[in-house]
Length: 362
Image (cartoon, rainbow, N blue to C red; front, side, top):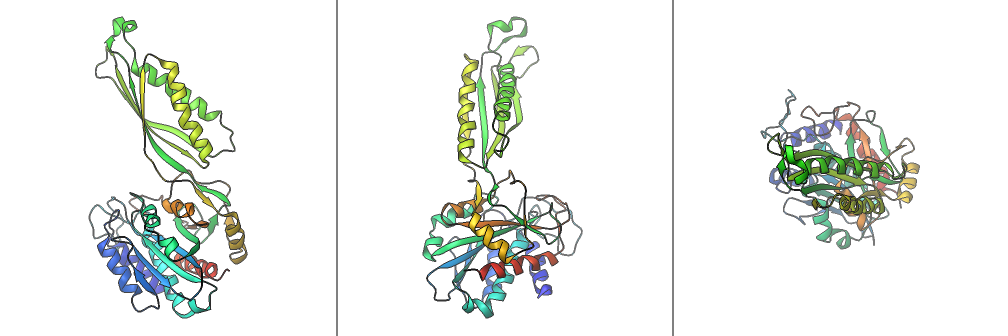
């Protein structure tokens, strides 16, 4: 079976597509799923679900993302991307290959399971968040899904090692934009103005001090990577813009930091502040019960020490049903989203085997 899974992954790797428009990827998945004892459905234009109906009252689901990234591949391999400027640089080609591998295994044994099985091939994980759209389409309710599993390739773990965590797994996030309006004045008469650049610098330091005062046991992050101000060296700037990111694993911590942005800004009157926030994805919180059950089925799975302060739209499913997200090590150390991202497909067999064992749990 390995040769088939390797071929699938490499064929998918050559046809990367972005966001919600994935016609070639969808057609490829359908070609592989046709002929299996499952019902195919297309709840979004490029989404595919495969339902193995065992006549049971409830269903468990497994999800793979489908979309690629706007990255130009630098790997010199026969299966490199054929779509210029697009690349499966985050392992989603491997995720799809694993889920297809599970589908092939289910062909002969799904009727032995204590539930039905739904395989979800989801577009738009990187952007704009296809998981939310699928939840809004009602697929979890339609198929009576009682729990859901997901897995992501992870370069920082040894090859074939699967890791997870109880509860906090990944963070809630939001992009933060802050505009500070002051009053311009010549530098020689700076007292007559309101220096937006100085205000931004002092304000930034205050924000970082606030974030450091939060309990170290709370996983969170508040950082700004952009600060723009001014047009000329000897004129006090009347405008500054800060662009950053805010992340936390608990909503209470996120809400506290967001509220403090405004509270601290009041110290800097008469400068005026305006804020804008992207919605982002919710925090990814694993079900402790499902993690404990999975450890029985997968005794070599490891528990990770800390969550990742990155985001994953799998968290939208967990707003509706319990679930568990796992990381599968590539062992390469090549970062996700890197133009040299690649891995040994043998690890995919480890993921397929893990999915199969989880499918047998009550």
